[in-house]
Length: 159
Image (cartoon, rainbow, N blue to C red; front, side, top):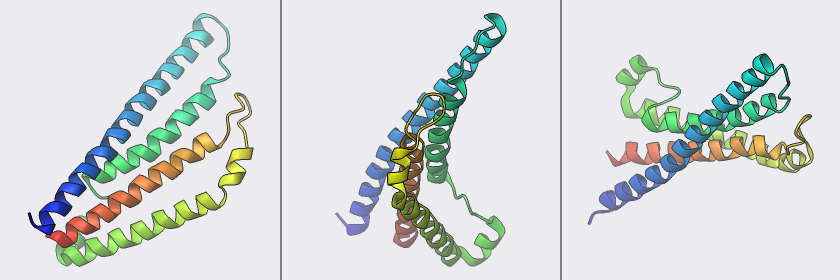
């Protein structure tokens, strides 16, 4: 077996693992958001009550949905892709975009981790949830995005 074939297999396994987590989180958070909003509407308009946790639950689920959804979208395509320019400059342009995007993601991830102790101390107003639950989505999502950009770079150079 060639090195190229081994690397391709490793990338495929890694892609499947990331996708399994991303899809699971996207499905669970999507259903949870819709359920919370639906329940909140029923309580508000039919029972004339309140569901104060609705906003924080929706916010928490939305945060996870956005960050892991962004990583999943990156699987199929490119966030910062300008097709016309890419067509002219080819692999060098794609590599530059991936490297800049990877640097950006790693920088944000690094800064987020620098302040992680603060996130453990902060709590939400209504449910008193640790803000680490919210920023955890950012850490997981950006880590997955960094891995996906590295995978894209490796695939680009394997061609």
